Length: 121
Image (cartoon, rainbow, N blue to C red; front, side):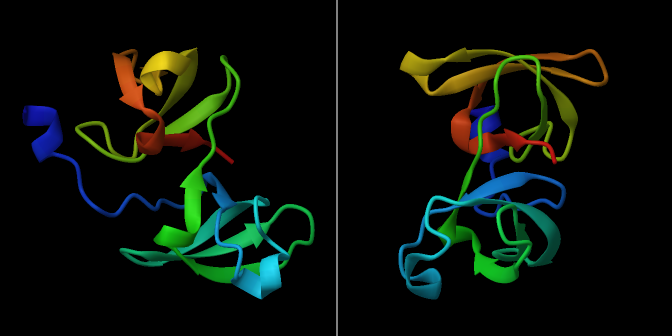
């Protein structure tokens, strides 16, 4: 219950990789495309520099989803007690939709939901 209480509705952070999941953005030109959050505008909007085109778009959090990298890659925790911290993805539990992360501080987070972590840019 404690972890749930520390979860906020907004999860955007700069320096993370995200995927556009809104088909109506630019008539679908950016659908399923990845980019890097270069600047958080407010709690629920960010400027995203798209990988393929280098276009910069201001997108709502609802138009984006997190990107889970392969084990061993750098990630940023987006929600919960360790919100904002960087670390390394140790493994992925596909059935639980969760990952385990070793933070740069050395702390181990054994079960972080997919939506609460994203690949570091």
